Length: 199
Ligand SMILES: N[C@@H](CCC(=O)N[C@@H](CS)C(=O)NCC(=O)O)C(=O)O
Image: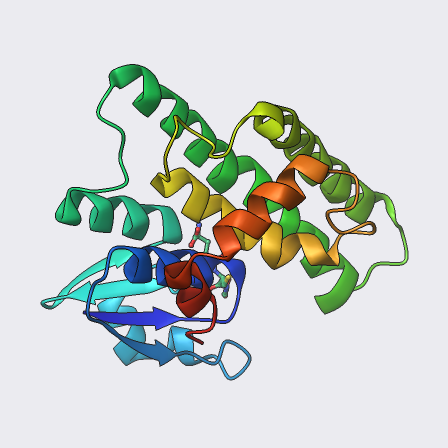
């Protein structure tokens, strides 16, 4: 397998899942600033023109969540058996992909890449991200893992947002002690440590 990746939370999500599942894979780091992700050769492999994407025996799958679920299904691991726990897993995975990650990306984009004089856009994205972290923090108050009593793909998809992207929020993870405790635990796993360091 070959993972085309970037040193961002989305790239890290794919990397920690590959490591935790024990897949043998190579990585290719793609330079977004140089536009390497939009060359004709790259778009032929991945027409979405964004990272990360995975090539598995020539077949491409784009996006951290799709890569994670594909790999878990392929390995038959990290997806709960019961429908009730899968319902929870889908809820959290959907929140991470379509609420939290876009809010964190917007905050990063308009505070660091294209800084705006008007603070309202950044405030909006910070508030959106904080609201999601607030819910996650309450959820983790009495739990070791996000879904059920063992590690699932959900923890691995959430961890890079907490470890990497949240560091750019005004108070980092300070307001959320339960997320801090959970992140210290998930981040201490050897597979997660290797995955985070892979780019
Ligand atoms: N939904 C995608 C988001 C992917 C994404 O936004 N990738 C960024 C890097 S983290 C990218 O490739 N940006 C380049 C661009 O938009 O041109 C995922 O979860 O992987």
